[in-house]
Length: 286
Image (cartoon, rainbow, N blue to C red; front, side):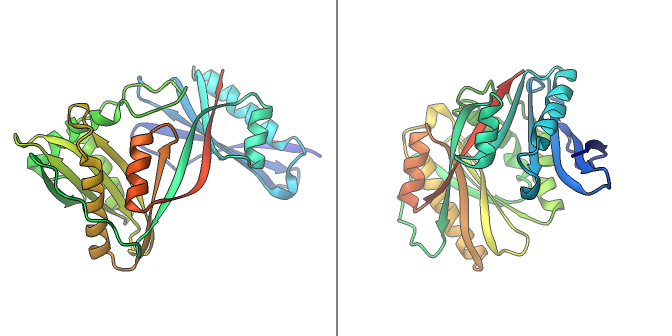
C-alpha cells in the first residue's frame, strides 16, 4: 500500500494559536486519514500542543495512523514542543492505539448531561453575595472584575499535564465573547458579586444559534477565598433556570469535569447532571 502525506493549508486561525494539517492519501488521491497539530503562540503554553488524528475505519491497521503520528511528533519537535496532548474516548480503539505508542493518561474527564426536563432543585441565596447575569460581551462596568475572576480557574485540576499560567486581559475577555457571537451562538454568563462589588465567581454556557439541541458549559470558577460557601451550586442553578426560560427548545446542557474534581462533580450531581462517558486526555513527552 502506497500512502503519501500531503501538507494542507488550514484556514482555522485563532488569535493565540494556529494549526498544521496533513492528509494521508493513496497514490490515486483517495483520502485515508488526516491529522491536525495546534501550536499555541502564548509563551506560557508553547511547550504544549494539541493534535487530532483520524483514519478511515476501512484503512485502519495498515500503519497510516502511525505515519500521521510520526509527522505530528516531528513537526512538534521542530517547534520546540515538549508535550503532545489529545482527548480520546476511554477504552476506544484510539485509546489503545495511543497507549501502544507511549501516550500516558494525563487526566480523565467525566462528561455529563443535564436533561432540561429535569426539575432543578431550589437553591437558597448565599448571604453576602448577589447574582448578576448578561448575554455576550460583559458590560463595561463588570468586564475588569470578570477578567480578574478568571484567575479562579488557574488551580483547576490538570492531572499530570504541565499547564502554564493562562493570562487574561480585558481585550481578550471581550474578544472571546465576540468570537462566540460571530459564529452565531449565544453566550450566557451568571456571576456572583461580593459586598464590595467584586466578582467572586462565574459560570458560562454557550447555546447553539438556533436554541436547539444541547448547550455547553464553558467554565465555572470560584475564587479561592470565596469557596466552600455554595456559590457554584447557586450560580449554576440560577443559570439553568435562565437558560430554560430563554431557550425553551433547548434539550439539555453538557459539561465535562476532571474526575478528581470531587466538589464540582458533587455540585453537578445535585443539579441533575448524569455521567455519559469518560475521556482520557493522553500525553506524550517528546
